[in-house]
Image (cartoon, rainbow, N blue to C red):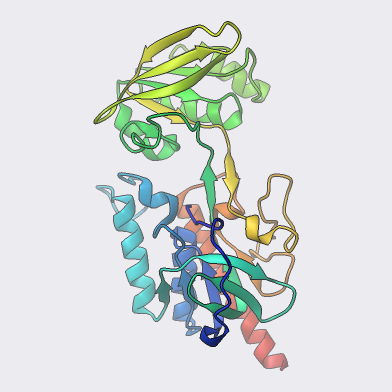
Length: 325
């Protein structure tokens, strides 16, 4: 889920300081679902959208695996529906970006582009961004043949030739999934051996639909209205070549949007925020939801479920605090 956390100067709008019961960081499925549940508990949640309403899901052309939409739904449209439903019950959605947080004491302080917030509880749903190749054509053709989610977009490549970039578990899992639809799947890896587990390697290496191109990187994604081919370079010989393809799936890892919270919340070695099954973090009153704490599923429905759980726990936390006060 896209949530811009860096690149801005910190403001000090103390005259615009706002005290809220629940502040939600992120406007993807996790954040907006959390806002919906918190709003229905009459906690008047405020959602800071970041730079993109709807998160990563909003970049998906059509989502066909979210229950209730048998004909599919556009990612941006689904995000708008999430927002309208949360607002209907009293959530406030602010098109604002968090710059920094101070979690040293409660209420927690969040400094944004436009205001300062003091939050009794905080739900972090800032998501994770897929790592990019950073080559010409990649950004321009995202959604037009370039994808970072086989589960989301694989169906659109029925009987077409696709390429997967990567050599870890995710790359092979997604490549195997794509064989359900594509006529052929070519895995391009910068090395001559895979990093994935042996079971996945064996499944991929013995699948008749999967081919491998070793010691190779993509240097350009070629196409105008859609992807037509890739420019390639051999990492050992330097030889240049090209490959025709209908789609490019990139699985070279994700980076969680947790820069602001480093040194303040417990995280794993990859930077994902640690949480228990109640979505509770290492600090009281701070909860997480979605891909910021989920390096495995990364689905709209699982993120939404985590958002509901986080908001329910935030409600319990604030109710208990009021009783004990």
